[in-house]
Image (cartoon, rainbow, N blue to C red):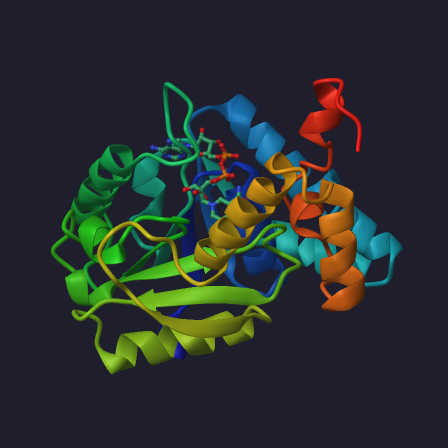
Length: 262
Ligand SMILES: NC(=O)c1ccc[n+]([C@@H]2O[C@H](COP(=O)([O-])OP(=O)(O)OC[C@H]3O[C@@H](n4cnc5c(N)ncnc54)[C@H](O)[C@@H]3O)[C@@H](O)[C@H]2O)c1
């Protein structure tokens, strides 16, 4: 598959991430077929793409795109509950949730979905997964096209943040890695190559975020500093644009909740 052969992208999952990824794709001039389980969920997908805080309508109001570009982008959009509608896609981006009971992600479910897609989608299509933590080679076990199965991890909001982690396995050819890098650039992204390793460690961002978050929580629990003070040091001392607690939405000090004071 060459870069110019890529025309239509299948997005599995129209949740928080899948919607924003789909928006990024259609605004960049590609066709997107986004599949989720019910029409109600897909209604919400469309509303995230059009009317959410980072949606296209606000983009038009802020002069980021014209009304015509928004209409053109919407012409590129297909929302469907039928997985067969993805069969002619050139790239698949899997971004499904955990199923029931609700987890953010579920390895068994991803394996099942990829096995189904592998039989259905044209043989030269490239498969990508937006998993935040699973080892890519483990997920690739579900498919025969292991050379064309690669990690593509987005950050939230996916249509705004530029970094994407392109996690390659020993089975990927240089050609596939390069075509994906070029494709990401066409979406306005900055792809970073990451070597896949065993152990479901996550890639660069989540792996480091996890360590920093653990240490930050330990400091709060030991009474060393409050979440706000830790965030202040990282922002005003290290130039971070967001503090670690702000980033994870956990700015309350547990000592204050239990009645302790600073
Ligand atoms: N939320 C984040 O910040 C974030 C960041 C990077 C990566 N991710 C990864 O992206 C994936 C999705 O996360 P999210 O936050 O969008 O979750 P979400 O719960 O908002 O959306 C997941 C969607 O997947 C759908 N789904 C479940 N099974 C499906 C199937 N068989 N076919 C099609 N759709 C199916 C669900 O109905 C739901 O709408 C997860 O694997 C997650 O780890 C999440």
